[in-house]
Length: 582
Image (cartoon, rainbow, N blue to C red):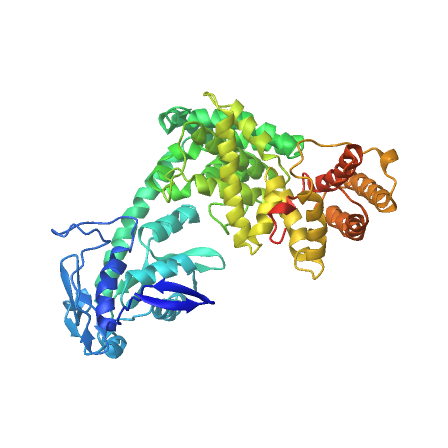
């Protein structure tokens, strides 16, 4: 303990000395926790340590310069010995020092960086595609996946029977990408009867690997052809009844029950969206068929084709083109950044589908908790928001949610509807912040306009640049003075113009009346900011020349009422009290 003088006063202080430790000691403590913190969608346990990891851990290399950092994880001690490619017998690789690691790994035929492996895939695969007069289709996600499945990529071109080209490209590509992770080859947009497989290691028997991959793909395409032929013997509408065997959620019924709700909800939404009779009819028919392909054999086998095969089977069944398109597009967007529906029928069905899902599952208590979201409600909420915002659609969410609630076979409480609204609003907060908008401006706008996401975005787009101007603080401060002095008042007071005798209060009264009238005719952010800009000098003069809290109660209430009317100008547009600096 010590006595010390701090800012002219004497204090008793405790002096604690924490001596430094070597980096190796600190790392030995940190690294096990680092490994334990890695999380995987699916883990496994394989020994008495009971540690869960994506695969059994067989060795650990941990070096600080030439020294081994000593620790153990999952019962495996750290060392300096790694292992090479399994196809070569997993030879031991002794790493002399940390700086030698990359060189030793490269010498063992392993491309260490995923970017390097991606480049190797492209460098090998593109010439193979060109040899048959085609072009490689290497989507970024698939390219990254195959690069992460190998240590050193070896591209091998295989082929399949041309007869399978009678199947829709979507089917061939789904099998090729999802099941086999093959890269397709196209010519002028049409799929060629070949593929590029990415094997692991430079020393493999290319012919044997090719033959094995061709055999696997041939079997999968034979299955797909069988399912497709069976499906096309019936019209799409004939599959709808089978939805009764698929449970959506036990308390709200089957997928067929959901479709029946969508058939009723979609025309209601079409009316709110201002769709014409033809578009509404197409949307309603699409709603009736939008889930029918879920009972087809091909979609049962390849669930990623839902909607895609629905469109194809609808066209095969003679349904109008706009109906078939809406069946496919009602699933869009599937994720943030995905493409959006191109036509209103698909938008209407997509909105109905997401609204029904959100309200139904919140009503029965199926709400996301933490990172767990097995029903995909966050995705549904974001899809709903993307449709409204990116397609520039004004829609009152509370009204739309209430329409969805009316169609459900269970009671939906007001609390459940509020919870859905709050859930969607929280997703929208994150969405807008990800677009780069200030958190306080987002909160201020959503406090008044969360019920209409597109209107909220429009308001934010106007407010954000204004809040960066040099005179913003003056505007905010002038408005804030009106709010601060009145927000604790127990009532809203009227304003008697005859009681306004001072020039400053008369000027504010006239300016406020003009601002209110103009905002009534155009209640948006642009008009609000223009009116507040004009009020700044008038408000400033009012507070300089007028004693608001006068001893005379009538005068005081009249002046408070005037300031309350200024405060109320932002209602329904923005809550400026949530903005930084208020």
